[in-house]
Length: 137
Image 1 (cartoon, rainbow, N blue to C red):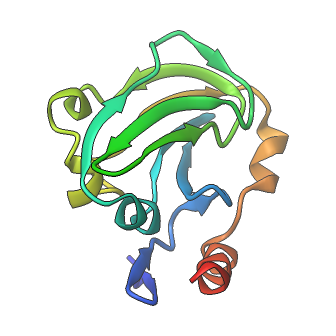
Image 2: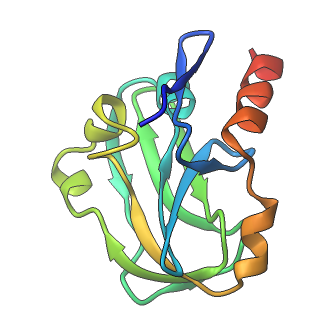
């Protein structure tokens, strides 16, 4: 496993793809597991609640797929790819703090069946996402 990239204290995993809305995407066999990045969870602060999508629901690229409620703000999580939700991380309903503690592993949000593989090309590489964090900070 290659070393993670660390930009200004934020961890960027080298084996994932990213969106400019601070979501990560792990692609496997026409499916994508999605979640929020370390940068996103640190900016949100202490996460109190997560509204998950329903299994079987379909979303287009850029549509709000989940909502995260933190101590001081509520943010939508936007779909990184068009597709159908085939699995959600039910643990987040009772343990929303997993998004803070383990954003890349235990704190994943959903798995989707990818509708349009060509959209994958629009995702950011870890290096490009790292540059985005540099600019935002």
